[in-house]
Each structure stands twice: as C-alpha cells, then as structure tokens.
Amino acid sequence: VHLYLLTYGGGLLPGDHIDVSITLEPRSRLVVTTPQGSTKIYKTPPQERASGVFTVLDDGMSRQTLDVHIGSKAGLCYLVDPSAPFKDSRYEQIQVFTVDCSQTELDRSSLCVLDWVTQGRSARGENWDFQIWKGRNEVWSEDRTTGKRRLLLRDALVLDEEAAVDLQNQTKIQPSGLVRERTHPHGVLGTLILYGPMFDRLGSFFMETFTSQPRIGGRNWSSITTTEPSRIQDRVTWTAARVRAGFVLVKFGAKDLEAAREWLGSVIREEGSIAREFGEEALFCL
Image (cartoon, rainbow, N blue to C red; front, side, top):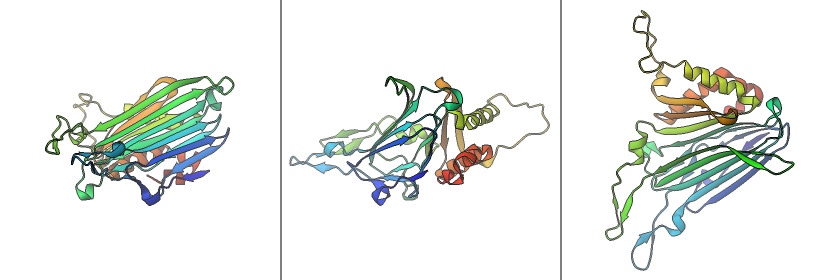
C-alpha cells in the first residue's frame, strides 16, 4: 500500500495540530510519502495585548503527532520530504512506532524512517531563522498478549534560537549561540532509522560504507595513487552506528537539500533493497 500524506496548503499554520494513526497488519507493507514536497511551517506572529505588550498566543506552536503500530512480518517505509520551518515559526513533532516483540529474527516487524529538517526558505535568505523546531522519534516493542511495552529507541533533536526578549523595548536580546552558528555549514540535518529483516542489508551497507571512509590521520601518504573525494561527499557529513536491539542509526548534515537528496538517494539506490521490496516509488522524496 502507498499512502500519501497531504496537508491543506502544503503546510502548518500557528496552532495547527495534526494527529495521524496507522496500523500495519501482519505481513503487510506500507510506503508513506509526501507528494506536496517539504512540509512548510508558517511563522508565528506575535499577538498584542491591551497593555501593548506583545506575546505569543497559546505558544503559537504547530504540532504533528504520528503513531504507528507494525505487526509481525510487516514493513514500513517512511521516506517523507523534510520539514521547512519559515522564519519565526514554532514547531514540535512526535513520532512513535510500536513493533511486535512476540516474534524473532525474520518474523520481526521492519521499519525505515527518515526525519529531516531544512534551514528554511534559502531563496529568501532564511538560514535557521525559526524560533524553535523540536523533533522526537521513539520505537517501542509491545507484547500483544500481555500489553507490556518496552522502549527500544528514543532519538530527539531540539533546535532553539535561545533568544530572550526585552519586554520593555520589544527587542530580541542576541543569544550566545544561534542555531545557524551551531549547525554551520549545514543547511539540512537528518536522521535515518533502520530496523528489522527487510532493512538489515541496507543497515549493513551503511555501516560498511561508513567504516570504509578515510579517517583523520588514516591516509596512506606513501601511496602513489590518491583518490579525490567525490563532489557529494564534500557537501555531506554523516555517521552511522549500530545501537541496541539491532537498530542502525544514520545521522547526516548537508550543505543544502539537493546535496542531501543526492547523497542519500545514491546510497539507498546503490544498495537496492528498498526498490526491490517496496518499489521505486518509495524513493519519491529522493
């Protein structure tokens, strides 16, 4: 099954709350994509009180919650476009995935989740100018006979401008560490979560590719032939690690969205298992 997630106008206004719940029955497969492109997070305008002091009404946060239950031998391929928080926007995202723990090895649930965020509208000069962007991904195991749950993975990213406001003059006090300074030189930050038998090969491929990368001080200077780094690698910084319960966690930062798509798409297509298991349309965002 291929599910397209749509939002009215292609984005979220201040105060918008979206809740999505999905259940995958045993042996089913689901591809989730976003044909509208990046999810736009619109700015949160200040509201003026009678006293003349500006404040944010009801925190002005746009929120999106995703709750997915994945049965045994079922597979979720969740490759969506990144969120694009506009200047002065506020956004929180919580994604919870529950897998069936009553099965082992090849009968386990499988999931591939891509979660990434851009610096905003670079064509308008936006460069991590939002107020706050919060994202959290959790994977739980559940015994359906007893209902007992166990946390397998929690991964969170908080990008906060950490700016104080002078209420007297209604001006921002410059913080000690702006988001753009902490994320420089990247215009995109992302996380890829891989778990289960359908994505074991892809996880191993990422690990092998990462461990084969040259490390600082690891170059053989006596070698006559030297390999120039690829154009893509120059624009992407990434790491991969195996964590508890058999997860492979990939973290990456890229100069821009084009570089991130080109790099991630090339690795996934070279390995090939997603296209074989879920079809080429699963890579719509790449």
